[in-house]
Length: 283
Ligand SMILES: NC(=O)c1ccc[n+]([C@@H]2O[C@H](COP(=O)([O-])OP(=O)(O)OC[C@H]3O[C@@H](n4cnc5c(N)ncnc54)[C@H](OP(=O)(O)O)[C@@H]3O)[C@@H](O)[C@H]2O)c1
Image (cartoon, rainbow, N blue to C red):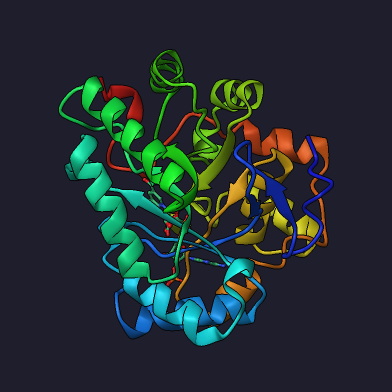
């Protein structure tokens, strides 16, 4: 359960397709394009983050790329994830969308390219998207490919149609949507789980269970939520636009939670979800 390799902000974990991804990254969903995104990424890089999670749908890929280039940090030290939006499902559309995203980022190869949602016109459509992504990977346009918001059912569909195992499944994952079945499946198949909305979009910061664990460690609720994910071996990508919070969210490698504390947070399982859509409802 504990993740011995997640000992500093520089710690990475190797994905099944080869590249190593940092355990902690900055999310930029709903981060305003332009200066706000560029500043957020700059604050994160300054605080030691070396991973940024964006998406075509967020409208800020170009700003993420600008901020990374402006930092002068060598390109191979920063890990960038972007995603294929569901209006781009299908073989030709996915090929085109991947190329456009890479161009907007302007950083060379995308480190990790994800299918954002399994929402497509048909299961065949998303399988065609996956085929396009394997092609983009073969061409060197992305170093690793994966999925997002896939349930075990969607992952099984993929497994029966492709030899390429997704490197990552990025899903809503925090104590209120703790999903050990998906975690076990991913662990068994070498797929690394990555948590979106690890802070529950700050909706439960004053929950008594979280507050009690935070008080016991003299930490903040945000740090406890991120550490809880790390204890489960999950990659965390909290979002903030504030320099102080971006720093705070990175101070999670110098303490651990006990098994009892982890279990007390696991027990919050049962909702509510942050996301609008429940992936289990997607055929
Ligand atoms: N694949 C997907 O479908 C999907 C869906 C959603 C999100 N994501 C990814 O996951 C990332 C994280 O998820 P998220 O943005 O939905 O939510 P989140 O990281 O759980 O929470 C972000 C919210 O928490 C606030 N916050 C951040 N640090 C805080 C702290 N230390 N104390 C108190 N409040 C704090 C932020 O406000 P300020 O910004 O004002 O600080 C923001 O309102 C996204 O940015 C995106 O990259 C992916």
